Length: 188
Image (cartoon, rainbow, N blue to C red):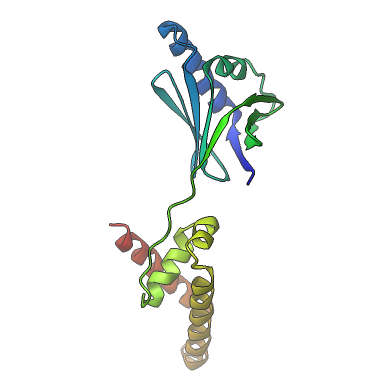
């Protein structure tokens, strides 16, 4: 699987610069640097200090590089507002520079959903979990069926309540608010 993220170049540059400066003070540039690819971006750890760089991307995992290489990455001139960072074939790429890395794949956690879950719970999972996590958990078909059931119920209700001028949009707003509330209930 190819891991690829798009990050804010200014934020990445500042994080790398801070980590290198901190490392120079400790004179421990031989330590490894760790890039944790997560849902909300990448956390970079070097010499016991972690800097978060927000962004979006595909894939979860950890790339370990030699500490000396983080200095080369910090010197990269980023010309665009965003920068691409990816891992492919044991190489960590930041724009046009690549450094060898040790990659550890971290699969997204599996979603646990009881067999007899209420329709609202299944719809909440479909709304709040990413596609990779849903597929890994084997819930894609169950969520698809729940969406179809919801759509059928909405269609029937609309036709029955047409004389009251209740629209599909009215139902969607109501259902979405119920799904959002259920999502919060499930995470507390």
